[in-house]
Image (tube, rainbow, N blue to C red; front, side):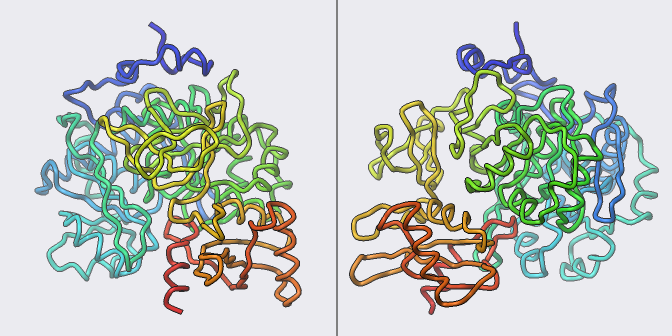
Length: 512
């Protein structure tokens, strides 16, 4: 029987797909499964598991065998120091040997790994620690002072002494987790004022993740894959690390503060053929004006996290010479829409979210929860356990079955009876060469109910430039679909994951 990893035709895989085909990709079964085993232990006969580009420019490489042994040592260390199955282990580290050892060693033990963003301040860290109540917190020695906030929590700095300690343990460990056991807590990218809830993933999540790996990222044996996203967030953990490793494919990661030059160096030096990043990363790479200085061998490009504006998409298509493919989903459901990078018979429509991945029923629904006809604005939803799960994004589906993002559901602006997408207005504004960043919200207006207000980071600030921008958008969209109010700002509020935080803008505006 043909395996899912052998398909290169969209039409064939949609026709042949059955959910049971996903299980054929793994050692585990519906009863017993362990993510660390699937990602590392069963691939020890393969060579490089990860290529790491660091902020200072150097590169480190680790094999599947090395990581399998280090994670087994750490799993034994946890077992010998009172960490039981189901206990939480927080890991606040940049991608590194220590990070992989701790996260996947905890998963191997049967504990719950909780990756945490390394730039969290004391308040953000305390909220997450108090929420998940871990047995252990691992962090960089430079961050050791943060551990003093938690009197009853054991804190381990990840320095040389840490490795000397776990080196004493056995390099083999037998996993005993069930598929339904918890494996990872992934905190969403909220703010410290509005605390995000942990999304709780079981070991079985790696099976459904294969849909994203195969159809959203287009991962196949032989790919030289690179994802610069922080593994503290969903994209970096699930799509940047677990997706390739679960298929025995080498991953490329970046460690340190974001640096466009280092990322571009990595693409050239590591001879990357498959590149996946958040839309924000692509925009930052383009704005660095350094992309033309490097040589690329990229054959598959994908993005996620938020829509990619058309100007950036056009630039990337021209630079890499391949379509830029969208991958869309939620933390709760995983990827539900994709543009199938590498599939020979899938036509990528620029600007679209693609089509549903096999196995999912996706539709546009109205406020009554009913499916709407093609071309009708509504909310993107996916059938989950027989019920519609709301993705909280507005969108439309065209006659060919492609989905199009129209902003968050609460980002849709109704002005004088017109429905306006914040994303479309932002996209138009970002085409102006003097606009560096843009965020659009609806604000109250006595006559129109709402008007479009744009917050812009720009290179010019004279009053006349406001009118120029209004005309610039008006002529590209429509007579009603432009920002009637404009504010020039030094920076836009962002979530820890780097997305523009429109909710914070709305709150700031409401509070005057």
